[in-house]
Image 1 (cartoon, one colour):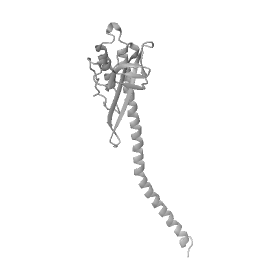
Image 2 (cartoon, rainbow, N blue to C red):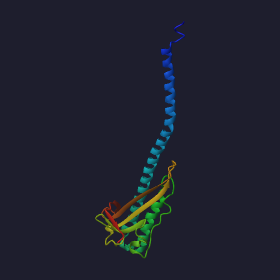
Image 3 (cartoon, helix red, strand yellow):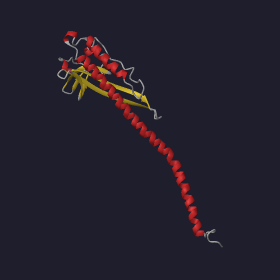
Image 4 (cartoon, one colour):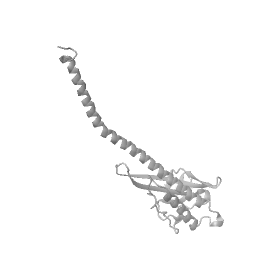
Length: 199
């Protein structure tokens, strides 16, 4: 018997185990591919959601800065704190908000300005999407008329439902921001609000 051509049972048994291990590895690989694809989709979904929230926050921040700038910078000669100036401030906030896109879609086009010229600070409804009000020491009050330009503030709260591009359904994202006028720096600035009221 030629030892190079024939193998004994102990030596050939090892070859069968190697083939069996390869088969198990292929089965595991095929089973793990769908899991890896779902995990990748989930990571992409979380990244997309974070980006969408960031885009919405930037849009809301820009809107309140525009509204506070128009309302706060109006001179007494131009009507100072008239209903016309407050309407212009709300429209500036609305137009700035509508100009932004969320995940490549114009999701913010339908946001209303909440303008009611006959109401206090032109706030048609409170709570509302875009509010004008008095800001002092971290407190925003939509129902109080600011006694000086430095206390004029614009607040915006937006909640939007967007569809996931990765097949995970729709998601709701929201953002809120407030800006007040700073007459010393002659600019609007974002401020932190500890409490907010409609009174």
